[in-house]
Image (tube, rainbow, N blue to C red; front, side, top):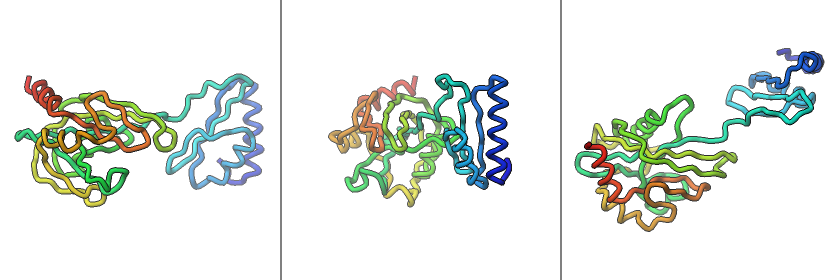
Length: 229
């Protein structure tokens, strides 16, 4: 890609004409952030934004005079809720430093976003370790919910994962978590039972707020029964 804007514009226009004669449909341009000054040039000749990452902007142009069939940018973000249990019948819970529930003393299960290129299993284990220092073994996905109108207009998939603790000593991540502890499942149900947006498996919550999965003692016993089969 040429740095000179006028030369780039002339070259791009000529190329578009040639591609149109060849029957090409979609043309993509990946513009590195170091050459971001060329983005307005491409926009001027008909390109539009598709998506952006920290190191580049992706532009696209649909050549034919027909409705475009270009796929949209990624529409969903994915996250995990970690239901971590130990041999004493306790569940791992945390209180967050930020977010809409930070001033309410709410005890919730560890949650977080799955990183790019990371699986659900790996993401759940990592989030627990980062927030609490607890090492875990992934058992299974026990449910999920979907939500919409999350930040940046994306939809949200939240996977509820059961994990078995492999350690017990909690080391709190002091940049995100204000407190963490092991809590009896029955106590957790009683403490959070009246919190708006929390219910059993199959929940959906206000998509404008961070979500956590709430599980009753009955569900917990059901999980333990399944896990021990």
